[in-house]
Length: 256
Length: 349
Image (tube, rainbow over all chains, first blue to last red; front, side, top):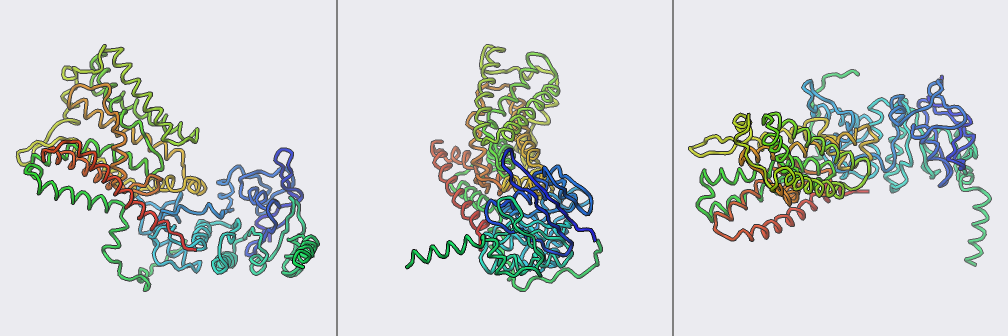
């Protein structure tokens, strides 16, 4: 089976700053590829290339086996790659169903909004994802942070995304809410989507991911299948292994 | 996509029967409705003429001119922008029409068309400048407000040697155009101005567009969170420029009604009106921050204006009291809106 997305030795420079170099990974249908890294590791640059915000300078980027270079986020969307940004998900004062259909509103044959259809499809699409909302007419702002992420995810799934890129979906959430969002990530994966999950929290990544790409200072620190690595090792690699031990030693010295 | 016919989903058991009161509180225009009712009852009791047919004709006419503008400004405010040039535009469009008809001898209909094109161009320029520069529309349209004010006075003085243009009655097409914009109709033996019909029509169209079309959905979105709207494919720039053009169109409509009714226009007309439009829109439930509001609410806000302004005259009070009333009304409206918004934006984590 051809992977949905395949990047090979991809690189991106901003002027003289090398933001990304020699990074390779794959995203398969029905699998979660997790991109891990500390701040400034190049996670954002990688997803911006995948999402069509920026173009890569080097390496190859294939979507379903076809070499590609997106001109805009819209272009990426048309190829079935949808991105859900952490803070760029919804319009808070608008109702759930109006948000769900924003930009792709259903209309009747007279050109008016088909509100009944909009409400019903929204309710159905959300409940298919296991999101059970009381009222799709309520403003999105009244939903919790996790629920809002889920509305955005359900929207991407409904509008035919094949690949879902999630930028730090759990960063601003409490433990319980993060769990809820991860459940929907798994849900999307089980429906056959390829998921790219960006996070700096290995404890969120490990339970749902099938593959890990660790980035550090714009380079791949390692790429592992889930069977190859345990969560302890993953955390240690991410935090920079030896550095963390040294820090621990130092802190112990302070306390004594 | 396969859609199988299923029974409509049963009502969610966690939803209690929505109380009528709760449903009403969600509407942005509910505060304005209550206010209008209070003002109406108050002046009906306090004065004699207010409740008469003739009285109603007067305050409805007063409300209609303001109302047309308030509704357009409300759409723009929901879209997240202001237009301070809206008041002066009502004079500019009237002046263009009057100068073309009286000085160049153009047919009134043709003059109206040219001034409409002028209005739409200014509206588009306002919108384009705001979107292009990314500056607050408050500043950009303050600039166009001052520029138009200067143009109105300067050009009028240059052409006529005074600060007013008159003599519309002798122009070709004045009768037929006047019928459309400035005639009266009879109800119960009393004359009502046709501007009232324009006001109602404009409000209905604006409300339908806002609530029942894709463009209406985009208006809320570009005002509520422009960046997010753009990321899901809403044409933000085009939507906002269209909103500025809508305000300019409304100013053309009001300007045309004015020039055809009074047959003359003062070059300094309309100054200061722009704030009244914004006030009426805010009383009608529009948030100053955008993304929330109602066209019907703005029309009701204008109605409160008209009723209070004429009611005070009927009551024989000094019109100074109107300003006090206005201030209190505005503050009350902003406070109510603020509570509503907080309720809508309340975030649970």
